[in-house]
Length: 410
Image 1 (tube, rainbow, N blue to C red):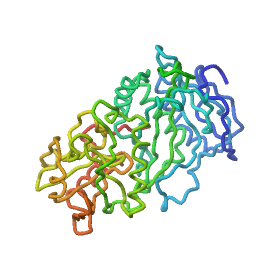
Image 2: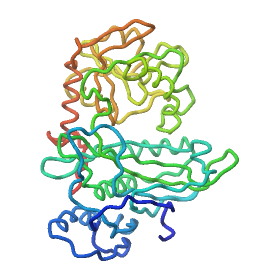
Image 3: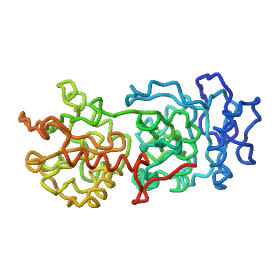
């Protein structure tokens, strides 16, 4: 493996049939595989066409182990019972650079374990960010991404806060495209789920004293997923946490750094042990304003008004959140971003959560200081259902994308 490789010690899962990602190019080092059946070669054309049509990728992307035995037929998965869990796929994308430098050369490698120094910045000081987005398969066989440039820009904002270099928006988006197409057989059939895409940016260089790491790694892996909550599009039950907090003013609550999520585990585990689906957090100063659910933004509906907590540094600027606000406005609702109180929550007609993983999850009940308030009569509220249908139809390519949000991979 040449110096452009990011990690050593890969242990790919053996798979039985040969797989060629694309034709040989000067910057994509591919060896000629054994002869392949016509139908397999035809299925390879999407990735090959992508590389041929994107000169910037052709000049900067290397494909490691291109003759590894990966069949192009759709993965043998029970798509009807697909949950939200990790499933190893075929390829991951890696790119690295040193501190004060810029990312330049990426590589598709067989998916496998990575090797890090015990003194790496990510392991010792939590210097890392992640993103989450999805790819959907359309009925005509094409593949859609949803607003990947928004994830790229959010990653760059987070990287600045965490003292890390970051890929450009173009590098991020093209890396996502390459990774999705290399793992195309793992994308669920239309209506059966999506391919969850997890970009990571981390301080991979060794550092002992508290300081930014000397080297950084950008990595993307993917996994086919179904519904995040086992309830699917069915009401979930939340408890309002009054003692522990997800974020504080001046902290990192507004960026997608890894430490934000470890901080919610204790309260979340306690809530689930009591039968709740998740936890809704309040602000750490006044303890009366809504912030987030563990990994979702929250919305409150009253009459024709949809409220959500304003972004003020402690709340993650969710891409689904941003999209739902625009969709709601296009449907004639009034949307407000402001301080939302517990009283607003308890007086609401509907409550729902948004996020890449859940899209929209309606809330059936809120428990606050022992008092339980229910919404929607044990069903999905009218507004939640309308917004969910509108957004997911756009994401899946079932309706015309008048917003210009989807990216089609051809």
